Length: 132
Image 1: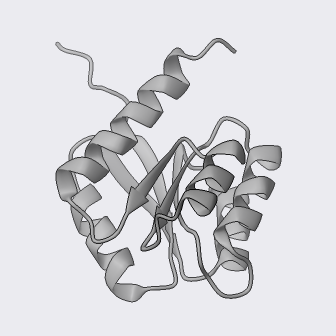
Image 2: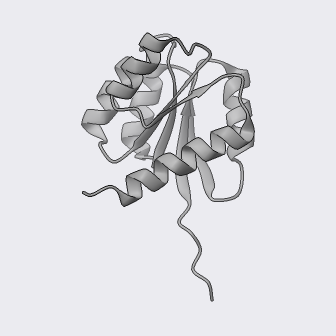
């Protein structure tokens, strides 16, 4: 019997309902399991600390706590969780701040399903093969 690849547990944190729905649709099935969805940074952080997902898709601009702020908290509290920033803005300062803040990648809206899946797979692979 072939061993199944471990399912990657993903959480989506975005204040845009359409974005959450799109991401959830892209990630449905396969080797991904969406374990939580939050609509603002505060709720997302609380949920991530409770669920301890493998990957968090985190919007940059959100109410209550911005993505970069949440990213900083996640890197401290859940160092093994892969965080991918999701945003409609791809200006250099924001991307740079996210990457230097510890984000594993940056996905720009509007989404291309293949690109989203590639970004997540690459980030997870990098995390799994990184020296501990």
